[in-house]
Length: 586
Image (cartoon, rainbow, N blue to C red):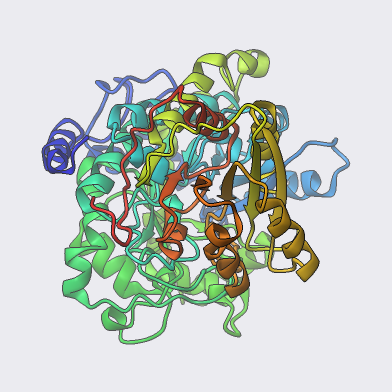
């Protein structure tokens, strides 16, 4: 798809999706809801029907505080004697949490735990997860999808929507109602260590079109979408899981770039927005994180941008917030700033107690609680939780990880493959039948295993040997790899660097880069050298001298299998880069 077509696509999407994905005729939604069954988002969050108002009136201040807290849960059920199970069950029964967020686990455990916790909770729980790459990002057994940047590389919003519909169906099958996706941050900074391939790209029309498709796919299928990380996490160089990033732009800059995808999502009717832990000093006049800033949340997002839905903090256990304040003090500031949901405090009960104390001493008003809790109940009503809060687990196998779902994931992997350059037309790869392929696996951390599965696939097709080079590789390991290159018929370099959350580094060492750059002088003259990025495409900027470079964006099985097909000449890579690289025309 040519980029000059993108503005038309955006206009089309904003026209088609001007309404939020909502509910059945009675004001509720279900996993079977169709995209025609919509009401304006304003109607969802002004729906003060009998169940909502009666539930709110029946709550004490402490009950209301509990509704605002979402606790993390490992989705692994090992029995009722498990300490985590007992803790969350008690908190749910006592009304000290209003929702749970699933971390890693498996499908059956997630559904079992969701039902158990719902059974003991007086008010239905809002069950959520971060499923940017699908339910499989959290739960074994679900469909594995490529990251957002790969989805953009396909140039096909309809494919993005299909993916989101599958994610929603699989999520609802195990009792999950809210997805902390899509990421609408513009990845303007190639050195971004935390967003990168999680972004749809650095071009506003493309990001808007793809995020619109994902929002529509999720919400038309009964799952609340959450755009993040407001006001924009794409132009930073610090991972907020590790420290406080700073967004240096002024208001004019934010209006022209970072805020545009959020404005588009709000106009479309996205149901929730997650606020990032990053400082925006030119807007706030301080280094206060956006997630704790009334200027950012209430003044800008709620009042000026007119967002009516749920506002959610990023996870409250992240190091960006840890500047000497207690978790309770952080939570109080988050409520005062205007957040509706306090996500993932490491210990929910002390946070609950601290916010309750703030209400009792007048630092947080009852009306402030009512505003947030009413929105939470309105979303729960839209999800249909007032009618049915339990999930039928008897047929989850027929809905989760099915061959039909896997086929869509494979289509995305294949259609996203991007041939960044092929100056000497080395693809498909032609070598003698007894030729030796040398696979150099480049990792940015010692102990990394990314690349092994692809090496196994490569060895099934070619006479291939593998050599892993990491920051901890010894001179002897470099020497052994160099000796192998002297007899190579082809050299294939692979990296799986994603720059995803928690990554301490997204770069190769100087020694690794020098090794790659001198490959052509070590291997026999004319030996094909092919670089494959199973992750961030920005790594290709470091090696402009390599004439053939392919980007797969992900090291999942589908992407690796697609690359093998490209090497064999069975698949033509048709993806388009969603970000700018040195010397590459968009």
